[in-house]
Image (cartoon, rainbow, N blue to C red; front, side, top):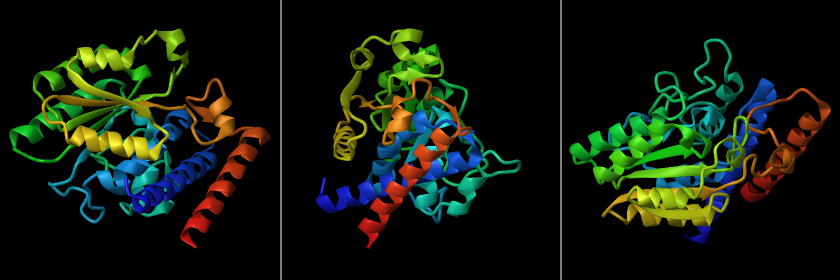
Length: 284
């Protein structure tokens, strides 16, 4: 990854993380942990790996993203706003009545969202269908399926993975957000996941495991996956729930949180101020 591209993606990641924090603080509640763990992934995708056109969100030649863990909508909305799919002011309307930005992503409401998601597991099947249809058409577009580690409790995920591998859908890149937690606690406590990387390999995927908070590592992994056409591809993102803000990283129940005390508001404001300072320094 060239240094200029790295600096661009690092700047975009800072903007996305700031926006996620700002919109959730404004809303007063929301899915912070699993949104922050995906910031670097979305920065890499929209920073250069994803074929897209903000002026023409339905461009037929675009790559598709299916955010199967649809509750992480804040990170996708922040990336889309920074890329110019819609005004940043929309971010502060998330979950308002009549908003274009519902708490879970909806393709009929938000420019740039390719698939409605939220009922966990279903995004894996719809992504498989999208990728299969694109392959049948001879399209060179990629489909990025982003799924949570807790979401893998759903049997539907493994049915979809088997289909993706059986049909050799190498342009469907499965990205698993392995942040070790889910709604009710750690994944180990709720339902031990065992070795996700080994399981994906056993399903026929060419599988990589990388530090999901490392922009270079994520970018390199996507590039390698794009160059591997002989089988299905999976990237296991080794991430931290609440990544980038120590207060949220250390909170045990950080799947969804409420901004209802001085401590969380202070931590959020300090993090936003630090990110603003970084952004201003880079853009100066």
